[in-house]
Length: 127
Image 1 (tube, rainbow, N blue to C red):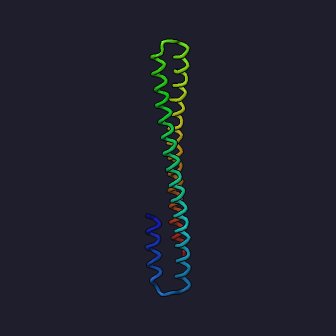
Image 2: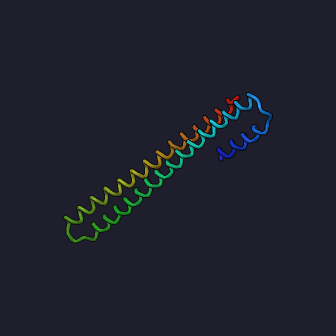
Image 3: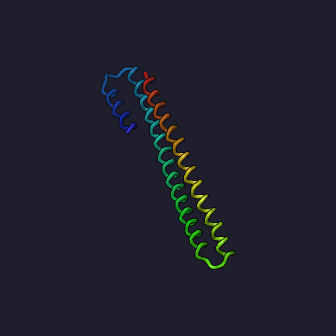
């Protein structure tokens, strides 16, 4: 949406009579468009990584739960104990990954918002 809005602003300036100031503003808008496109790419990659992390964490937690259930139904203590330990480890790993992904997502969101503000400031400073 930001790139589209910048392109709209640029089209307004392009309809004005040509002059040095107009060309300077259009170059500034082009710089903002480039920054916004780069930011969008970073956000897209972030979403892919986040979704992959959350999927892996969910799979680990499910596998851990299956191991714990298996441990409860196995007749031998040795096999059941190993399954319980593996299951607990997988569930803890899944939980840690989920929490880490959520914390990382929060930090990234604030970082992305600050970049949008920087692009807006860059546009305002364009003359």
